[in-house]
Each structure stands twice: as C-alpha cells, then as structure tokens.
Length: 162
Image (cartoon, rainbow, N blue to C red):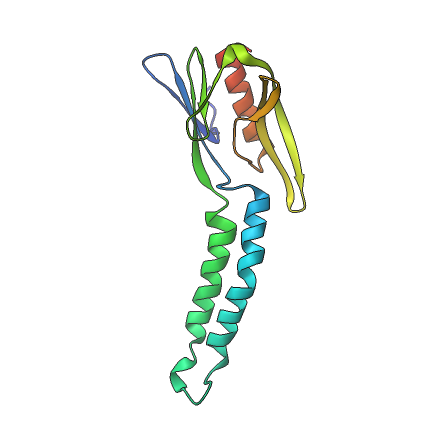
C-alpha cells in the first residue's frame, strides 16, 4: 500500500549518486526575526498613526486610513511570514555534505550527528548539528517542526552511513 502522506522535504536522487534535500525553514534565526520586528515596530506605528489621524496643519490630503492599514499588514506579513519561511538546500555526496551557502564538510570528519533543541522566548526550534573538527556545526536552519528536523537527520544518517 502506498502512503497518502507526503514528506515535508524533497529528496532528489541525482544520476551521479548524490542526494539533494530541499526543505523550508526560517530565513534568519528567531532572535534576528524578533530584533527586526522590535526595531521596526515604533517606525511602523508612528507611520500608521500619522496616516490614520487625519488632517495635520490644515492639509486635507494627509488622511489615508486605507494606506495605514495596508502598511500595518505589510509589516506583519514581512516580519512573521516572509522572514519565517525560505527554501534551503543540502547536497549530499559520498565524500561529504554541502550546506548553508557553499559550506562543505567531509563525512570522515564527523564524530557525531544530533538534533539540537533551541529554547527561545517564542517557542522551540530544532536544528541538525554535526560534531566535527572539535566544534558543533549547524547543518540545517532553524525549524519549528521537530518531525521535519528528525526525519532529515535520519535521511542524512542513512545516506552517509553514520
């Protein structure tokens, strides 16, 4: 029987034996996302209030409540939806792994693979990390889906034989 559920990532097997994993995760870390939202919030609120208040200095054309609403919703979309999702790519070959913008790591340098939980004020995030060359190297971007991170870790482990 064929399963009716789909994976949350795409595994693409290449003719040369390599494997590409495409997944969606955060564009930036949750801390940077929160910083962007907090820093831009006062500017957006001043702009929204200024546009919605109405005539200032007798200028009748300064009242634009519809533009104020559009500005507010555009800021919400940018901070909480656009920054939150981006498609990322991990390339696996028999020699090693390429991830996060061209960084490469040989599988023979990897001592341990793990799923790391990051506790933030906005909730938990998960990343796949490798212990290699005396440091913890994050392989994936932060994702709020533990099942996605765990299944990607298992896919990498089975491909690399780690």
